[in-house]
Length: 183
Image (tube, rainbow, N blue to C red):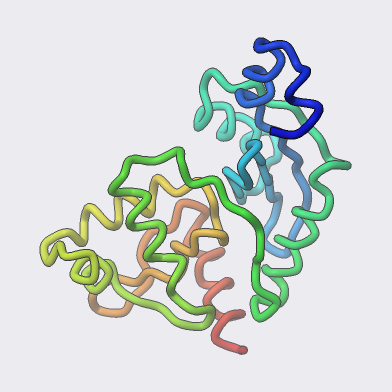
């Protein structure tokens, strides 16, 4: 607890913990929205329409106070756009992955170990998690991921090695994988 928090009334402190700041920018993949809780980045959403991204964020975090803060998140937006253009730059942002079930969090942690330029299958990841018949559950956890790129679900393939659905669009998935393969 920093000095300022020590003197904040309890309601102000709880309001701060209940607040998510966000900003929308542009990237080579279209509109991007980054959102931060007091712990770290809790959402990176990708789409064609900024308003749709705003609605998606509100749906994912009901009951939270959402405050637009482009100046405060400008560096995060720049880091995400840079990662999309140059995946070898890495995406070193603190993540807040608390907004998922314990199983989803296990899948998301495992996804974060897949190196840039590599891919794996839903089946292989399920086996790695000790669930040989869990490919569908792994795919469902990927679909629930709100932190695109930070939790790299785009690196997941079908058992036959083909591209499968991607929350942000199959063409975006293909573009990300092509950029990463070029490293």
